[in-house]
Length: 346
Ligand SMILES: Nc1ncnc2c1ncn2[C@@H]1O[C@H](COP(=O)(O)OP(=O)(O)OP(=O)(O)O)[C@@H](O)[C@H]1O
Ligand SMILES: [Mg+2]
Image 1 (spheres, rainbow, N blue to C red):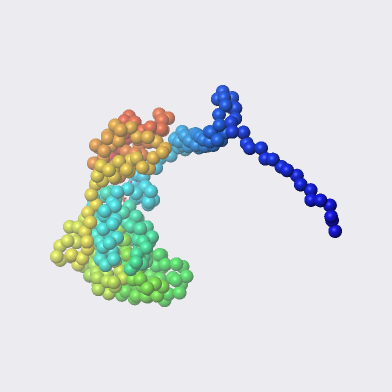
Image 2 (tube, protein in one colour):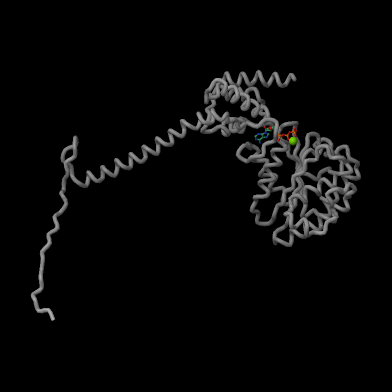
């Protein structure tokens, strides 16, 4: 047992000084000094972040110039979503129509039909529709001889299926078959749609995106009627089409055409001012700057034709490289104009 008296020690805690003395500032209350310190560190942090972003903003154009970064696309259809501009209304309308019906896109050469089909294919694949599962199938019919027509269509459909499914399904389609008929196509479509439908409660909508359908104008009426029956009668619920061409509107709008009155028609027209400006400015945003008069020059000379706008962008940026600048000036678009005129002469 320990009977010694309880030891006690009295501790006194000194209150912090109410004031501090700072160089140049003199004596100020401690709370203000701590507050000031916090604000200063915050300002330093923001300042250095700002400086870093300023440095990046300064470096990016120089690096782009060194790499000769030129995002404009001339010749090829646009595939990338971030380089595709305009056509919002048309896309919205087509996506609605495709739940039940088919669409015909027509417009002059180079107006953007193929680019729109690529864009549609992506949007359909990514659509989270409450009622339908869209399966887009892109088919370029350019130069397809009539006897190979149904084979070509089915080849594209089959390419969109996973390899396992292709092997598993009992299809009439053979890679090398040359005598593949409309009847074969009907049979294979039944198998494929049935297989796809087993995997979902929603309605399967296989959408054929047929580019360059003008070739079909020279096909026998019988071939066209066979396709029409497949689309409009046998698989109306599960099969839809977006056909694109230059002269189809006139050829397919006559009462004697098998396609008469079966499509929702959409004409692709030139870009309006806003879409043209987006197409010029967005691809180089944060990298190069457009001078106002250079933009206006292109708007005045490209007549809203997307391929022309892209050409001006491409050539002007190339010209800008030669001058070692990161701003696109009137001189660049004027040089582009000359280059485009020279190309048109060839
Ligand atoms: N929506 C768009 N956004 C950006 N560029 C576009 C767009 N549409 C068309 N272009 C430009 O126009 C050019 C022609 O486009 P595209 O090949 O899609 O036209 P098309 O109507 O299919 O032509 P063709 O009649 O020769 O088949 C492309 O190289 C691209 O530069
Ligand atoms: Mg095309």
